[in-house]
Amino acid sequence: MGKRVIIAGGGTGGHIFPAIAIANAIKKEAPDTEILFVGAKGKMEMEKVPQAGYRIEGLDIAGFNRSSLIKNIGLPYKLLKSFLQVRTIFKKFKPDAAIGVGGYSSFPVLRLAQAKGIKTFIHESNSFAGKSNIMLGKKATKIFTGTDGMEKFFPAEKIMVTGNPVRNGISDRAISRKEALDFFSLEETKRTVLVVGGSLGARSVNEAIDKGLEKLEAAGLQLIWQTGKPYAERATLRAGGMKNVWVNEFITRMDYAYAAADIVVARAGAMTVAELCTAKKPVIFVPYPFAAEDHQTVNAMQLVNKNAALMVKDNEVLQKLVFMTIELSLDTGKQEELKTNIAPLGITDADERVAAEVLRLI
Image (cartoon, rainbow, N blue to C red; front, side, top):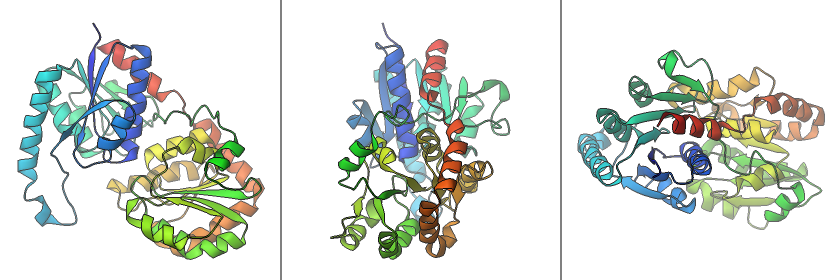
């Protein structure tokens, strides 16, 4: 009889894709394990998890809204409702363990599991731990971290540094550059810039690229431009008829996007950083300035200080990003230097490390 594991969390690709990678690694190691995901209704995970072949239950939950306090009026009710929903899920599924990957739904699931004496595991991908993970960490069975130096947030004896799990296909690099460029209908002879604003998009990055499209074209560059939902329509109209631009709100095959790219422009979420280290690409980071404790800047600076990446501040992106992208595209020596320095930072088996430890302890 296989073990039953709940994986809770989501909200962004940075939480969902590592969760799916961990689930796949558990199934590979112990095929008879039953896995159930728990997410937040209306969030990305409700679509992405079933696409990956797993069952998901949605909670009526939302986080604290920092920008509009009035929107928090219903928060205690939603929290209470989500705890009752989690109770029902536990009664039906009877989990042996719960893994939290961050995001709204992690907290009620792991809190209830701990109250019931069920083993709980946390994966903290960022170099700055989230508040709910810090609270949950006190009673967690094991805490997996993307980076070292996390003793300031969690009990040292519970920490295991595993790195951050990356999506299938990115680490094994089985796709040729030609194959990848064909996938996006782009030319083999041109240098390619991949612009990724994270799964939800990045307004400042999108505006800078929008403003600089002609300059990028004049420099002989072609673009794979992932805009996120809010900017998709505007970007599609703007790039209409430009043969050197592939534009979409979301890239379903990031393995192809990384294989096609010569240079990457990206936010500095922990998972994006992990994927870029594994893909070994020259990157210009534009950290999201409103991330908790400005952790994206911390993530980016860890690489910048090792001469493994470049960085532009969000408030300077309109003035500097396009210019820096063109400058880097012309400097092959700098590209090679960045590639050489980023390569050793990639961890390709984080998902297997997490899976093996979870299965060992349950």
